[in-house]
Image 1 (cartoon, rainbow, N blue to C red):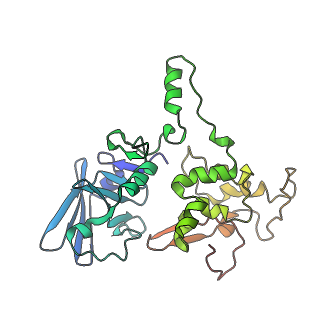
Image 2 (tube, rainbow, N blue to C red):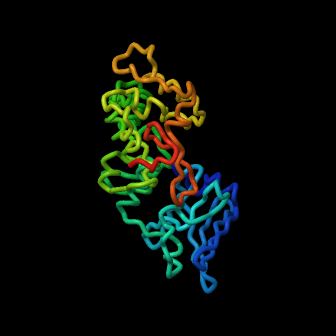
Length: 301
C-alpha cells in the first residue's frame, strides 16, 4: 500500500517504457519519457493535445490522472502488463470521443478526485478537501494510524505522546468496514448496485459474502491473511494456515469444528477462492467469496 501512487520524478514503470503508443477510435496516443518528465499526447491527425503526467496511480497496472485548466481527468488509456503496453482504461470502453479533450480522458468530479487521491496518497485530503500541496505519494503510517506522526514526534523529543488506536483489536466486521473505505465495503457495493464480475476487486464485499465470515471472529479479518505492512504474498500455500485455523478437527477453539476438505490438504485458495477475470481490465483477481466452487457455476453476487 505504500506505493499506490508515483509522482513525475519517480515513475519506474514509465522509465522502463520510455515510449508507448496506442491507436483507437481514430486517435493516436503517445506516452513519452524525457529526463524526469513524462508526457501524455493524443492526436487526431489534424491537431494534438499534450499534458504532463504528474500522477501515476497503481503499481503493476497504471492509470494517469491528468490536470487541464483546473480540472482533473482520468486518462482514457492505461498501462497493463498483460498486454505489455497501453489499452483503453477499464470502465471507459464505451466512450466514443468527439474531440481531443474527450479522447484525452474522462473528466472526474471533485469528489471523485478527492477519493482517488485520498486512497492512493497521504496528506492530500483534509476535512474532505483536496490539498495537493501537502500530498505524499503512497500510504504512510499516518494515513491509517491517525495520530502516528504526533506520537513519533513526542518520542523523538523524549516526551509521552498519545498512542494511536490499535487497529489489530478491530473485529472482522469493523476491519472489513475500515479497509472498505478504499477497497469498498459491503454497504458501498450494495448501495451502488455493482453487480457481476466487476465487484471481484472489492475484497471486503466479497469476503463478507462468504459463508464462513463471522463479524466477531478475527480469524476471518482482512489482516488475518494480509499484513498491511508487507508486500502481498502470492504463494497460495502461504494461506493454508489461515484456512486450517477453522477447518481443522483438532482445533480446540470454539466454533472451529468445521468440516475438513475431502479433496486436498494444501493450497486451499486455489479451489475455494477462484481467479476471476475482471471485464475490461486485462487483469485477473482472486475472488474473496470463499466457497465450494463447481464447474459452470454462475458468478455469485
